[in-house]
Length: 447
Image (cartoon, rainbow, N blue to C red):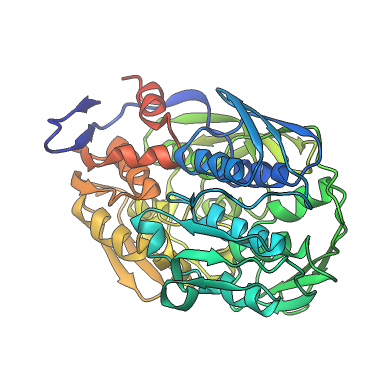
């Protein structure tokens, strides 16, 4: 791997020989966010081990500091002395959520519950993402919120009204872990039960963590395939004194995909989170014929499944991803642009409109950028279609991450499996969720 001229701001990823590696991936980003946010509400110090030191999650530490938590970080160990649920001071500064949709949506729920004046912003990408999906239900619970476009966009301010949110029931039109988590965190401060019903099952890290904090969490599986989650306001949180964050499955997915498409490869990912609401991607891959193995699976102290994943090079066949598959694999779906190119037949992704409101319009960006490196891919309103040919694979070329970490890393993996190599513009965007990506890329490909 060699760095191109800085004016070009591109990194060339050359075709790789067989990948034979054992690797540990960065800590789970979703769990790092939630562990820090729940520690803000704790009444005693909490030590978080293996915390992800990425841009998004460091923004969360800054945010809770602004809300009065004392944060001491040494590399990947963080000790947080929270302010409890009743004595959190009014923030003395604007809270910058940077690029993190998870942070801004969950902390808006906390801020609404506290009822302290607080103002929030983010980077240009986050300021363009929709916030009405959390603002409107929070208003229905009694929060007073103003912002750009009537609260549809950042910057947003929560006005001081002393909290006092009402218990309520919410029915979401689309399964969303961020929206659900926002409302469940807000529900910790309500005057009665708060419930959220989703048409499908989104990732359940918040439910598991709140249960580990002795919150009464009700879970009801609906006959329609939906899921109703409710919380009873606890008065105070009994947050575990120590929380260890497992490896991020969404980061592991890139090395799993690389092993499947680079001939002769076998890659083992150590101690990675295997929460079933996050690993639908593995089911999709098995349906494509992937040779995958799970080793040593078990639950950790906060109820999260953890284990090892082994992936081996496999002949792949095309598949169809349906709307019910999307919530459990939403961050990994762009990798199907790569995998579909090596699969026999036509791979179709449907029901993934949520990808259009990520860091970029990921549907449009994936189609346009992967097409530049030789993937035969067509955009759909709710996804994309890839026409695969294992013999043709991916030619190579030059494409851009567009500042989206997952697109950049996906293009880098495409370079490993390509015939001519791939030049990725702004691959540094990977640092949002995977600060050591370039180092691990060099290690796994023996560069």
